[in-house]
Amino acid sequence: MTTVPALVNPADLVRLYGEVPPLGTFRPRSLNLSWRGPTVTLRVDLSTFPATVPPEWEGADADTVQCHLQFIAVEDFVLEEWEPPVPFASFTAEPLGRDRRMRVRVRGAGVDLGFTGHESVHVGHVSAFRIASDGTDGGRHLFQRPLGRRLHETVPGPEEKTFHERV
Image 1 (cartoon, helix red, strand yellow):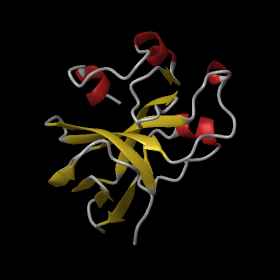
Image 2 (cartoon, helix red, strand yellow; image 1 turned 60 degrees about the vertical axis):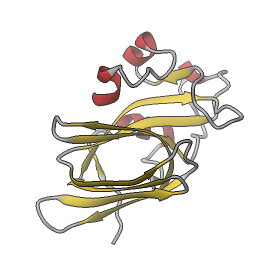
Image 3 (cartoon, rainbow, N blue to C red; image 1 turned 30 degrees about the horizontal axis):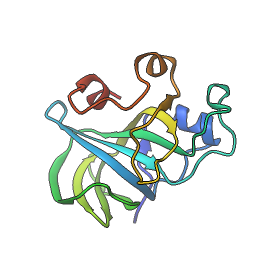
């Protein structure tokens, strides 16, 4: 049985979409592993763009929403393949029936990732951007939260731990 993980803080996504958008497929952008927790943070492009956008995004030439999904209490991490850029991949979360844990799989052309973790998933760094013709996301990002807008115009490099490890 595949289920939608329990999103701890879905308010930013609900504000955009009216509900939590489908998470069965997304475009994986980056993967951050941290010993704290231990955690796995995936930066992903969602498969749909909202019908209406917040006022601060109006008039912007954006066509893609991106966010971080952070998984906590991670164990049994296996990365079989990671060859970016990765087109859309399937995402599944299967409850294990004990201790509120789930088995996570992300699979597609260029990615094969699996681990177990707590069923609660944190969402953060929601932004909109215009995907480049080559599929990259290196251009300007419009972050939904005011602090994100003030601190970042683009996605920071992997050395920026506060961005990639904190959701």
